[in-house]
Length: 166
Ligand code: HEM
Image (cartoon, rainbow, N blue to C red):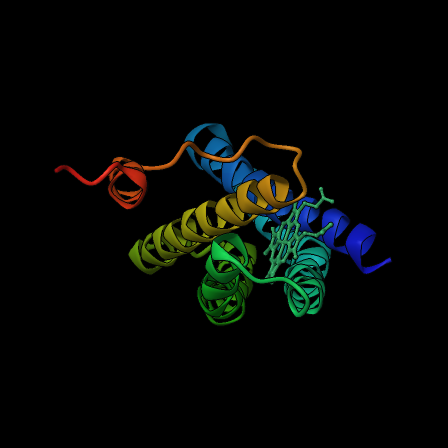
């Protein structure tokens, strides 16, 4: 059950962020002010109501599954969570709420643009970190091939097993 929940949350969370991100860029470039306001409203409701619990579920179930696992990939996934969660709660959430308020009031000034840029940067950061977590998760369950060892690792292995020169 936690495995299934982790898979669903782990796919849904980055998918949500990617949708918000692409829709925001699209509507900012080609949409009317009404469309921008409508999208910002949809990002808050139902968007955030889906995104925030999904990030929490991905992190929570991940930590649960990670209790019985160790290794480089689990460690890397754990280390990314202290960036993903606060970025979602302390940056994306407040940005989305104020942008929605300002857009509904028709206030598209320079502050709106700055906060919009901050939201896009935070969204891109979380998308990257979550994407890396998806990649490492898929590698852990064998759905994705592991990366070949780096030159450094190859050299270390070679040095460890090479015949000593006489
Ligand atoms: C937003 C953050 C995360 C995302 C998007 C994510 C995504 C994924 C995905 C897509 C899988 C593959 C699941 C499958 O194919 O069955 C996976 C597996 C896994 N993840 Fe995460 N993950 C996240 C956070 C974490 C964290 C914080 C941990 C804790 C270390 C973790 C531990 C694991 C483990 C142990 C597996 C293997 C599960 C198994 O054995 O079936 N994940 N993750």
